[in-house]
Image 1 (tube, helix red, strand yellow):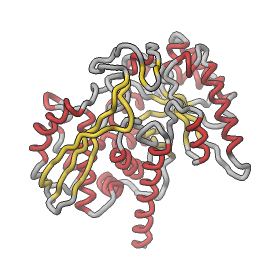
Image 2: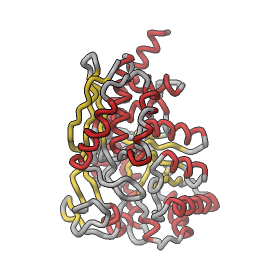
Image 3: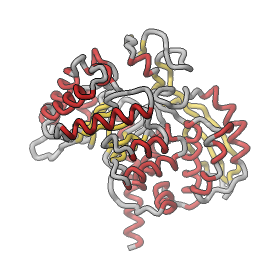
Image 4: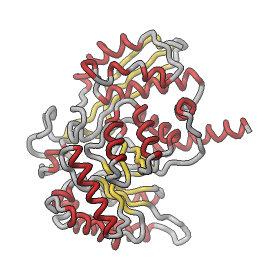
Length: 418
């Protein structure tokens, strides 16, 4: 079946674009906004309203496939593509994507994405947000044409066993770091809380003392809100945005000792720390994480570190994995551009002994989040992010319910075949 027409609809994403460099440099918060001047090119203020663009593929039979172009909250930082504004990129879509797609056949996802190679590098290279939305739409179109779920299409085309296994969901609190933890405990979230530890004075503490206090509070709260008959023992995962490196002046021995000390606070729960340092360059980031991991192992610590900054593309993920510089890699879905790179990244991590966290950003949309559920069901990463938004309930509902619906359909089809 062919694509009859391609339409574009500008929209909003579920959160905001934030100038990470300005925030880490100490920009004061004023209500929901930040005061001061932006640092990262492209920003006109430190916090800007998030934007998206929907790509609508109208097929010959009248069905419409959808994918959403979206970019991460901290656009323009850590080696990522610049700020994604609809007004800047709608003309690109009209000029480059629309004439390229109209009249094309869609039945095989891998064939369709192979035809996109001219847009992935060189002078015609598209923003990662565009490739993200475009490949979502092509996967949806293939699923519609074949009468299958998106996860079934991926499993078939990549030769993967489609199981009935749920993917552990990782939820983030945003700045509601206490209220949302209560919600997560009541809803028995698998992995929590993220915590948004993005500054030293308010959230980390100059000696890391505020994070330690927060961890102790979470462990107490789990005990308080969980019935004795409930075997609820979630994994704890905190993103510290490189603030440990700043607080401890880049001293990896002190950082390792601090991380190891957190085991006294977690009550035996598994602990992951994402982005302990940000070295502002990929090679230095890999080396610093590798040394930190070695120091943790020498201390006999079971704390695991997660790579995020400077680990953006499929090639980056391979480099971090091959260097064995961390325990888990975040596959930050919009940063990878085409969703085939998410598939390949999860599979590469798993085949090379690296834990795969299929992440993303609060700044996505309901459409991109649901597509990511199908990618996760097909590839089985170690965890996936509840998204979009920073309110917890909404993103968790979108991801969990899409997963349960898909599993119910797959289960029904398997039983029917049996």
